Image (cartoon, rainbow, N blue to C red; front, side, top):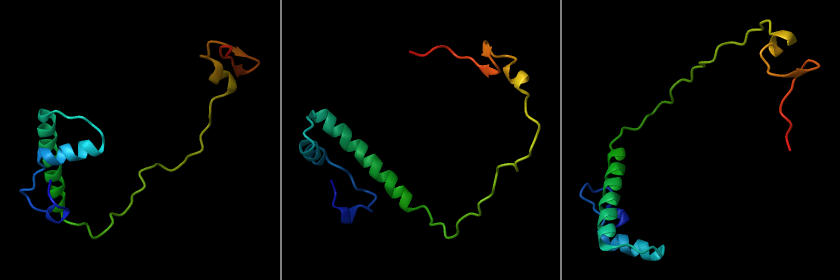
Length: 100
């Protein structure tokens, strides 16, 4: 594994010994094949971070746009219309199954 001072170099790679060291600290047993595989994956992840360093900084915050429509007062359903498709109702209310 490389030093953090070298983290910006494109040829940084994580070696299996560094992976084993971290795995030992975490008390995780790894086979040699797993250490090699994880070293390759960590190197790939680090290269992705290096790619992020190449993204130009955005200086201005984009203007926020309200995408919600304005509230409009409209006529709602009557109680009878709301209960029309209910499987069961009682005294003007939805009736649900008994719980417990």
